[in-house]
Length: 450
Ligand code: UD1
Ligand code: CA
Image (cartoon, rainbow, N blue to C red; front, side, top):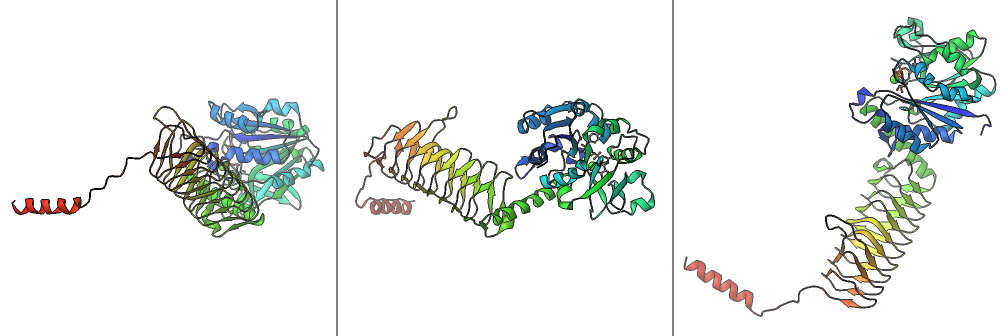
């Protein structure tokens, strides 16, 4: 990685009207994390020494997300939306602090990779004053065009200001730009707004640098990496691109996906070797899966840690705070939440295990339910190692089942069960010989008499 200092300026002051949302655009999520988070993750990975985020007026929510991801990020408010150069200059105080390199990114371009940022920035170390990132979209309409001459970038022309010949250029401006830190402010301060939109165009940096006798260059990126998100349709397109990347990288790292197109990951999903994921599985944020885990079809996981050799599903739902130790088996229609289940324990059918600790080797029969909530507070259930809970048992928390204890089928357990004890908590069975036959005869007789 470069030893040059890097100031990143992320523009997040867009209104995002086309999203038709109460939520600011850059807080919409792709693969379980906000677009702003994706961009900041990429810039951190690319070695940002300082980060400035430019937000719109009153956007404390965007500012909070920025500092949640990069705690020492500086947040600047662009009070009026007067163009991309004006937006960068909202971060003037950060630019004045100086840096070898300055990178400008849009927060609504979430798919850019750290390697691409490194490539964009590299020419600055060789003396270039400006580097822009270009791509070739299927339809260039609306994008600025990169006017090149050999290796040199001559100008970036906004569509509205372009000649017919310039409009014919297919090499378009993605919007990301690298500027030499010592020249950035002087260049930005000379950008005017004498153009068809009356905006301060960041793209004018190219011609200003060249007029100073400095060089400007263009790097090229894949369309899939620089796709900007302006609408819900483009949000879904970005999601699809990222899911494809996440699936390919999971498989490259030794995970079997039987039907990759049906498995959905979060950007932070961590998977071990020889994990098998059957079709139709959704990984929400915060999931870590150890080696040799099998995830059967139709599972939903979020905030869960699975140790090696665990098997879950089909149709299991693991909610936040789930921790499954080695070899645990979770079967069909089982829901867990804030539950630590120790090694070798089994919860195989139709159970809810919430706010609970289950000791090693315990067996929870079909339909075991922890009754953890009274409508006001949550309570814990402790199940000792090797305990056996008979089917269809309700464990009314707070309650402790001792290690090695046995709970008879159909119990409603309201008080603690000692170690190695048997607890039977159901009404006694009553049998009346011949009762049903007599009942039918009496009813038939009554019906005949009308
Ligand atoms: C910009 C580029 C264009 C490029 C295109 C790629 C300029 C002048 N044009 O055009 O060459 O092809 O992006 O998508 O830079 N923003 C602010 N404050 C502002 C203006 C913009 O924060 O005052 C932010 C927006 O939120 C957005 C980004 O900057 O994230 C781009 O702004 P936008 O108005 O969409 O620029 P384009 O006209 O699309
Ligand atoms: Ca745009």
